[in-house]
Length: 371
Image (cartoon, rainbow, N blue to C red; front, side):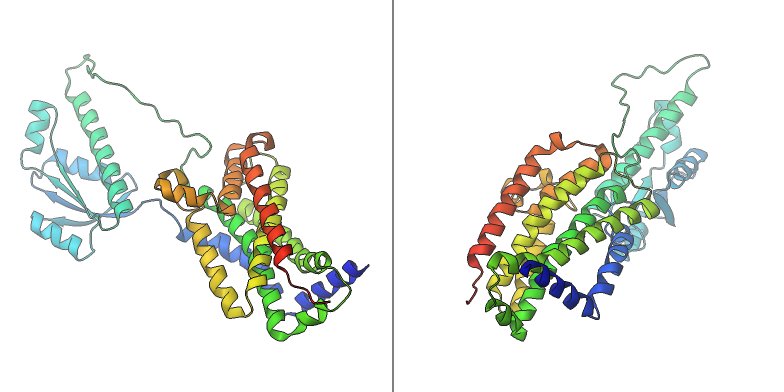
């Protein structure tokens, strides 16, 4: 009975807040509609500067094929390399395509020609991917020209391996599909882990927590009563995220939604335990903000949310093992894109259960209640 009244008190206190209920409902729409558009590593609409020293039909055709790919926008046609380099220095161009004077002659006589690609590598991702895209388009152009220049009825004798690419689980390589499940995890972490911590620390500053500490209620009842409202809101927000992902991105989980709910339950237990640990050691909102800010930055960048964990240095991969976000993000992506079943996700489940046990045990032992 005591737990019932404590939970009722927490819900009333939460609903009386003029900001938090509205913020919680608006937050998922803001995060899922804005962040996947901004946090996007797809490279498109690169500004291309062309230095055409040949001015032949073949060089014009190459430039047209590059711009027709959708990855490049012709920003400038320069007369010299120095002029093209100046456009890069002024951030008018991202990459330079330099066509040599004997481009057409070499294509006709030698059936191949060389061009120079000079990317602006200040942004390493844009420079690397942009030059790779451009090199691939030039290679396709070269093969087309070689096939056209062969005598009628003769097939090209090309040695080597013909590679056919089949992209599983995300055929269009849409980066939004990679980001949306991860943003759902981040939202659930903020609502069920860090908001309860702020709530408890705020009561510490106001002095109302002491009134609860002197009641006959046990530590377990006090802790559970603080968490149940945020757990409820967290799962409501998760369902809203499912709806937003389907409505705006056409994303539905390939696997079972029940698998997501099962892992979400364990993740919520683990992360709310972390929030309780933070609230037990922070006596002011300022202290809580600094601790939570440190945890958020560490967990997000070590979770594989933006870049795969396998691409990190070995020491960083070891640190990433202490991030609960890493395991639930893996689960969300695998269930949403691949359709993995619970039996295939035992390692993340064991990791999240371990975090839940460690953090909640730590929270109960560090909670100081005065009788």
